[in-house]
Image 1 (cartoon, rainbow, N blue to C red):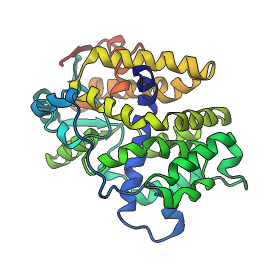
Image 2 (tube, one colour):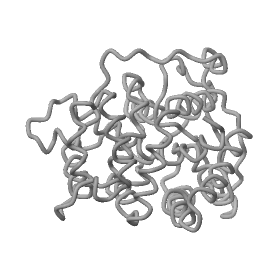
Image 3 (cartoon, rainbow, N blue to C red):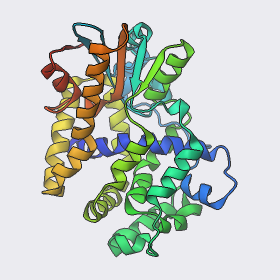
Length: 341
């Protein structure tokens, strides 16, 4: 997968995993009714082996770098940590600077605290937003060729037994699940966000949720018919290289190269404009820009008016960079934001 394609997939993948991680956890409880089984169609991993670390990922032995910024203001100070929502076992321990930031923080802000998600409510929300209720099926909403490719891919995957259930869901949910399949092999290892949340609970720190499961699901559900169809098409087309792209994302986070992250963001925008045309602005605003603005306003409120202490904001890495990234938005609000490493 080219770095350009990685950039485009990175944005969708990060958001999709928040939901898919939660739904996978639901399966471990062996839901008792058919509706629950459908909504939790992404099973917990079983005998799938952990993907071995690549040569580029070897620095993980000394601590995965990730992305960390120091933020200073007039009232409270803290850190910004760009995360990735999954991890390989060999990515731990984390870099000592990142571990120190977690340790120093009195308050930790996450997109969602996945350790506290109400699984039953999540299942209900998925069914409320993703189930087709107008008598149509998935096949009616996507290109026939894409539909056949989707079914073929699922039948060869760990979701083969559940392939038919996706006929009842909107294209965004089917695409999101397909896009997240390569991540299933990593489910036995806590993602970076989960690790930070568990550390926070263990040490009695206050966790702040910057978003909600409702708002996360609402992002997908707000897609226009055309955008859903395009999202589905692109996901099916890139399914063959998804595992390679995911591995490269994990390696990139392990190395913590800021220039590479910035380049990935720029290529995400370039690829988006190329493949989506006029729709890209609405897509990018929905996935990144609008969310970044809302998160930056909340961070500003906590740093300027919140309880005294040190704040660590840990959200997806792609939220950090670019003209509308959190680093830039907070600098415009008067904060000093310095990259640690």
